Image 1 (tube, helix red, strand yellow):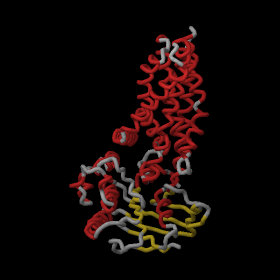
Image 2 (cartoon, chains in turn blue, orange; image 1 turned 180 degrees about the vertical axis):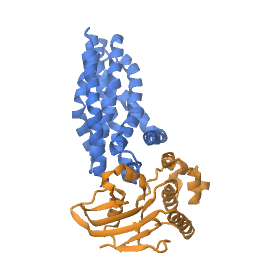
Image 3 (cartoon, rainbow over the protein chains, first blue to last red; image 1 turned 30 degrees about the vertical axis):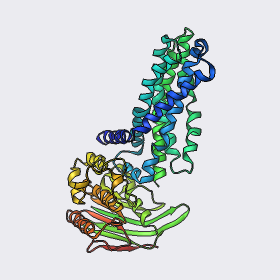
Image 4 (cartoon, rainbow over the protein chains, first blue to last red; image 1 turned 45 degrees about the vertical axis):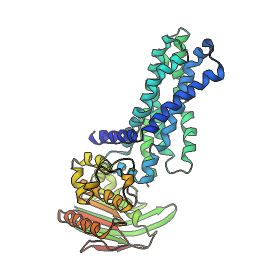
Length: 221
Length: 198
């Protein structure tokens, strides 16, 4: 547990030092979402209806942005060997990385999503459902992202491969997440969608971490 | 406390770089891996660290296969690869913080052991290649691990730094530690056995 917390602390310290990267993700999220009113027009009826979808698609794309550095930097400078020898199983190293990714990417996105939805004229009643969906949703994305980042480690052009690997796997998260907020807008209960998101999280937790651990061991060989 | 390997073989990208390698190092002992470039010295170190699995043969620590409990073996190993694993954005002291929290030892003492104490607050991107190497070696002083695996540890070091490193190596061996080092340059390791590869 001490090693796990030490590793999360190391990751947070590193991302604090490279604060521009964290900020870039957030700015990308806000900018990408701001393009929609420009392209579609500011009419509240259309914009408000598709707002949950916009927030979710932009959050998904923003979460993929920092993934190629998640293990890539440690792989290139030799730190990955030290992480694998720190006494934690490889899957827990991946878990610490995924948690750090969520704290530096998922959590800021979650905080920015509220004002952004307001800007897109989303029905305020749908906001709790949107945020309740983004909480497990961004955790899902961090787990999927950590797995994909570990798998493409050492591959040439891994950065190009990453979104191709993550985006199809993230479709269930996107569907249930956007549907939860849309359901409230049409007067239905978001509960089934939120439960399905939690189910995806429960499945992703062991599968993604085991796969990421195996991929890290493979990359180190 | 003894490291032993029998009949090791390993492929590296479909090329057999190691075959029929036997070695044994006892407490306080040292083993130098010698051989031309590409003869498998680094691969052998990674096998001994448990980072890579041998394609044939076994590695044992105190007569127990290291593959049986990789986590326990990781705790016995301090590894310095040919890369320094130094983060340019962190200061010299911060680069050691993770290793220091794992072992509970004082990073300032480790920096002093490699004569980097005055540069502790300097970002690592300002350090020279030799100073980065010394920072990588400072991790050894932080680790309680009995088995040191060193890949060209003195590359880029000046004579003063090599002398200080000799003190670290001697102290480690006196306390019963083991050293396995791959090198082309003479290392300050008296009474070291040699293993020629390739």
